[in-house]
Length: 118
Image (cartoon, rainbow, N blue to C red):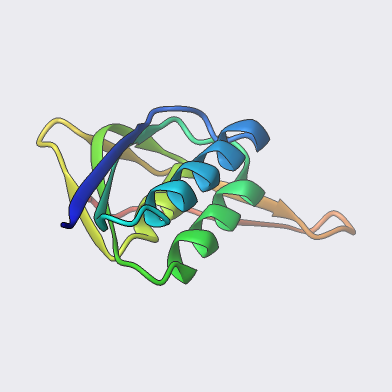
């Protein structure tokens, strides 16, 4: 017997929530009756380092993951959302992009702005 699992993630991305996310996903895909996982996702972002780590974590999973936006997906939460094999969104979901800055030392700063409608 196979079973589709769902769980909701509506937190900012920090060390505690990233670890909880990974633990929950590993627990679900380790279930004997596991067949599919849909993550109901909304986040105002948070740590860029941890968001990119979650992106890599999701991409390396041996099973396909479905990410479904249920609210705002903001800033560093966008790479987490985009890591899934299948991505869908509720009609009232919103994706917020903003200017990002990285300081490479020596006073140099690189800025990138996305000016495309989603």
